[in-house]
Length: 125
Image 1 (cartoon, one colour):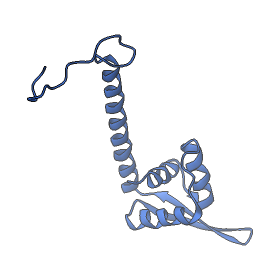
Image 2 (image 1 turned 180 degrees about the vertical axis):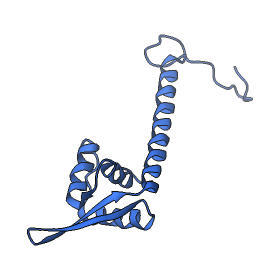
Image 3 (image 1 turned 60 degrees about the vertical axis):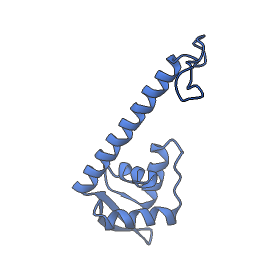
């Protein structure tokens, strides 16, 4: 799942939203890291609709303009939960590896010499 798709699904997790509302919510949720353009957003919405993860909830005319509101399907909720779990597991693995690296011999700030590396024959020197 792309980062854009993940944040669009997340933006729709609590309520249906129209395009501009999704754009603003994605920007807020990502602390400004993801700023979708309108063309990109509608490409993502089309793909998520085709995949059955979102559906058109309703259409409203406001100030002479048509607003389409989208909402998650049950499949969309499941996909978002699975992706959130996958990302959390990956982040946890990265945090553990970083912590292990900080404690390893030769790591910056440990004051320990580096662990011996392989010798010429591939064994330890």
